[in-house]
Image (cartoon, rainbow, N blue to C red):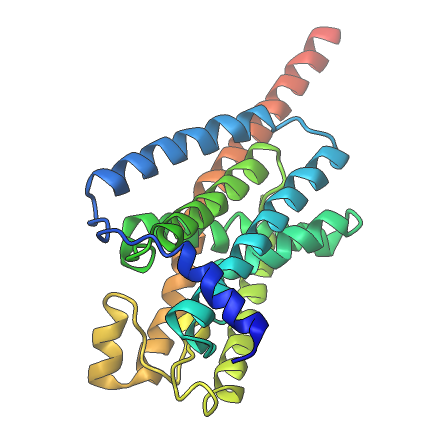
Length: 276
């Protein structure tokens, strides 16, 4: 270990403040979730009328913050927990890691189909990931304050981004747009599986991006399925389950938009009738 690595180990050790893992639905979990969701909704409403330039600033700010905190997390796992050995199981390409890239890319892309597709994905699949993390919090509680706060804030930001994009009208409004978001998810899942295969040996079988195998899933329910029937059975059930969950997240916004469009049409018809 060279001087730079030793220095990084010392820096990470200096922030390794231990804590008792917060209990699911305990005080820390419930208070953070309630306050966080309220703040996300209020902030999303406040920012719903921002200009296109303002929208880019919001997304870039979130993406930049996620990158900075992810760098810290990677260094902490590598130089404190792993004592200089990279921990492949936290490779930054999980479903909930994707917004880190999408927020930055979307903030610099021209307004169009690609940017819109990213928005559709973040208001369905990534919003689902943020919500599920707080419903089943075993993956976001740690023995260190910095890691726990990182995980809680990270997933709350996924909820904020989803809520903000929906409030500002930049969300999946049609079934076709949801289908495009689903295609993006499936493509990313294939990429994740490829990453798992490419780094399988070097990671000693610990890597499992998107929880699609070949390592057994660590997620609730799917862990038992993979242990009993194999990772491939678990994956074949997991992928459509995620798609269904994302559809349920998409449905309220879709129905609200349809109702809003119908109301606007009725108002236009009434205005035309009065003019006649």
